[in-house]
Length: 120
Image (cartoon, rainbow, N blue to C red; front, side):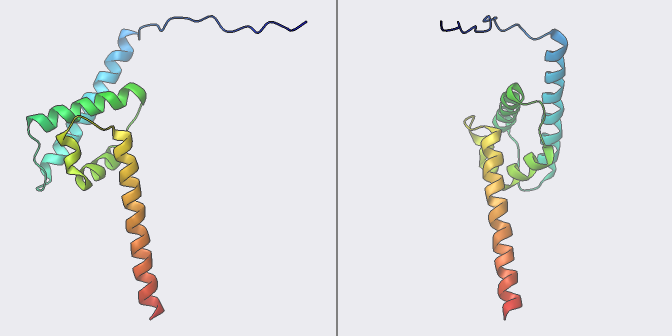
């Protein structure tokens, strides 16, 4: 006789408690305020109304799936790719992946230059 496989009871997704929602909203607002302050202090980037709205949207989307965000890495990635805030498409996760690739490429180029200089 083949034993019957028991699947867990499908339970509906319960709404998040109110205090968790408030905590997430506070994290999003804090991250947004920090980023907008840091980006506006940078002379190369000016945040218009659209860019501010896109930044808020992307932060909210990020915090739906993740509990934290590295604001220093986000700042570096946004400085490196300022056009990211022009459209609402694209996730912060993808931005971080691109930033990591560019950073690794820069490190490899620096090592190559150093090896060429010491090899001469």
